[in-house]
Image (cartoon, rainbow, N blue to C red; front, side, top):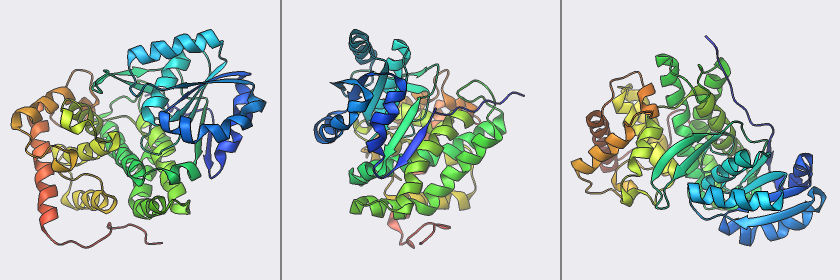
Length: 376
């Protein structure tokens, strides 16, 4: 059996890390095409661009909000016209995915600068392509991982805490999906078995979010960097990225893809939908009640959705949930990596069961905190 583990070229994290961007980019040449989400383009980059003088010529271009084929091709054309020697992304997950695809097609290195810790996209060689309306279209597997991932936790701490919470939802899936792939001997993103290293990192990812998630969210709400915030940012970004890509994916991300078929859920963050996919997967794969209680308690503690109403799907019909199941079970979806029977009807049943448990827990008094969560 051959195993493959995928890594970014370099990972830099910490408060003030953005000050190193110029020196890091200078390793890739002297012409740098920078793609930015609207908010950092207006509020963050003006203070950073003067420090990029050591990197050479820099051209900035705003991101068009959706990672679509048209947007990728538009930016590839601009990067080639600029004769870029590297592509840099500054912003959220869709901006980062788009830049990875642009760099791959332009044949140049890519630097990833996430301004929020909301997904595990930064370290991966995966690009999720959507329609202009935001409906999941396909996964594009790129030939290499990012050359640089640079995370300034002082920037992350100033972003709305909901983004960090969503990142915990995405990270929450990492161990469950990697463990399913280990049991079923399913292939990872590279097409091989997951390594011992990948599974250990996936497990550490879950434990970090479980133990430090609530404290990290409190720090982010206060706009400050603490050791707990550093741990969870690393879990959301590096551990989850390595764990999902090298360990493998399962039901949670397929259910996320299915939920994008319902317009009411599209305004929710990627990680919020993935987190509910985790809850549904617990029922789909018949996990022990004690583990279900631990995961529900974690979601409740950090504000992740535990009912369909939390996703904007209050009153959703059985027909629509079957549509979610059909999209989640499409050919090639990672849900087929699960060591369990899979069908659209079973996904619908799991979604309804997860919602019922979430509603039951909301009706009863409960102790605060998560079993096993650290309080210091």
